Length: 387
Image 1 (tube, helix red, strand yellow):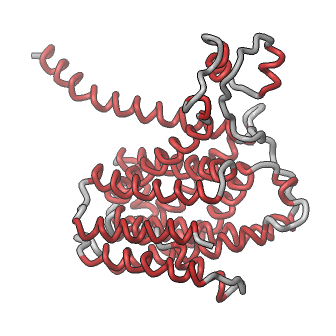
Image 2 (tube, one colour):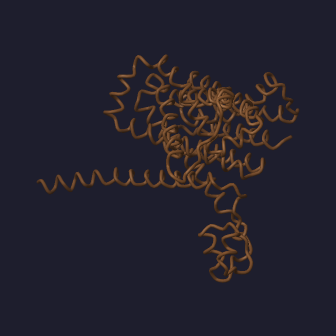
Image 3 (cartoon, one colour):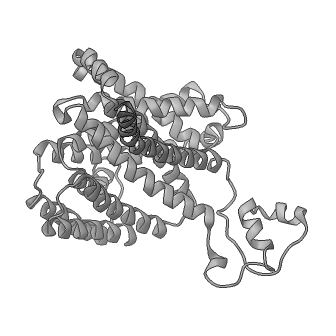
């Protein structure tokens, strides 16, 4: 009997071990890519066909990675054609950016659902996710030969405050929107961010938007409205929160552009990774008072849930790490690509995340909802491409 019970326990534990192993592998891959990518200031790697270079010195000067060196020295060089134009590091950035976003949405939703949804602890979870990012940023600065500490001044930090506050608002309202409704619906509404960016840029920052761009916003807004009609998990709170997140994101983009015009700031920050780390730290600090004001009276209840429910504790940590890493990788990806490539990549990411997460979480994929999603995201792509 004991042997049978032991076998049954082993069979039950095996899937959990496998899931944990897969999760660990994803973490290692994302973390390694983010750690090694921040130092790559040279243009994106491109494998070139042609003759084989036998001198290790020449190969080293070419900037090729060990993997691409193997490709270039095996069999007399890489054959011309598609493979000769493959940019391996850039494709890796895209792949892990998409995967990080996908798994963040799943882990985030599971954590929110286990903690009670919109009536539970969305603000607490959103702020603590930023806290996980802070721990990772501090580790990267403390680890030897990892990332240099930025040499920003007190005035630089003061100028960064608006960006940090807007980043906190965009993230926390997004988390609340995803706690109040379906992830797919929240992502569809968030895809309408260009509409909010256009209004904020013209009304607050005095920028001009072309007529073609204004017209491109019609399918964006129409697609969101159409997707809302047959949304089975529709909630006004989710719609309002997602729109508020878009508003904060629009202000953040404009404030960040103003910030980076500060003379010498880029040199003092040192890297894209440092910039995102500083923004995350400020966002976390801004979020703490709001956490205490909104859900501070329930803190002991959350701590009890965190200790007793592994779904909350595990997914809180994983979602925070995924959020930080995929955002850093997206920044590195955007830095290495053209505006057109960025537009297509963002559009593809939206489609993959909306459909993939809906399938993974069993959310509704009504035809009218998918039609609205397609129209809205198509409008976003059009808005990004027209001048």
